[in-house]
Length: 234
Image 1 (cartoon, one colour):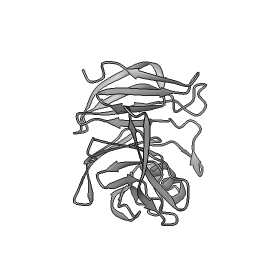
Image 2: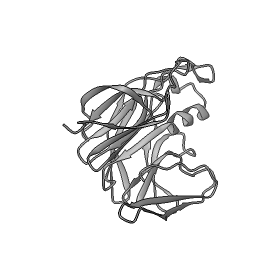
Image 3: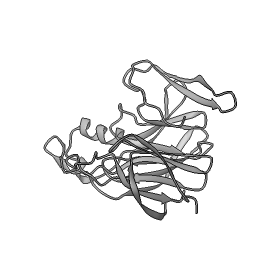
Image 4: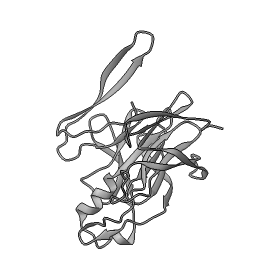
């Protein structure tokens, strides 16, 4: 399992492995996070470490955690002018509204932001994370002390192989009759951060997962369905 969500003050990160022959699921504890307020939210595995947001540091977009929940390295926060006059909670909310993906060994990381269509590419080495490319396509729409109802939901899911990164893009607002996390567009990026292909999907998806050379997609609208996205590696 490459992504997890922690909601408890004292949290565990679990690894889930499925034995197809025995039809058995094995669950192991691989990390414990007990720091009050510093627990991770959405995350991905990065070798022996974890990538997630850091709600305690408003100047951080995402961070590298060790297995005890300690932050060992951070990546600088997004820098849109619209955020400079906003409150710290709004900025933190935006940074934490991110999704994460990594290659097979967790060395290369891609982080996608839901509220600003921003992407970050980074590499993990010697217990440190180093961002080598950042793309900021679209600033957030802010109204008063919060995000505008006309704000677009942007990158809602990311998954990766050793060769490429796949990102779902929505472009819908919360007023859209279709749920804003249902995405019509799939973008393929190289690990250098170069967009390679844009796909318009015949069925909207809200989540994707790369496994054994195949890309799977999940949709909840108009009914829950699981799809196989064909020919994605060609």
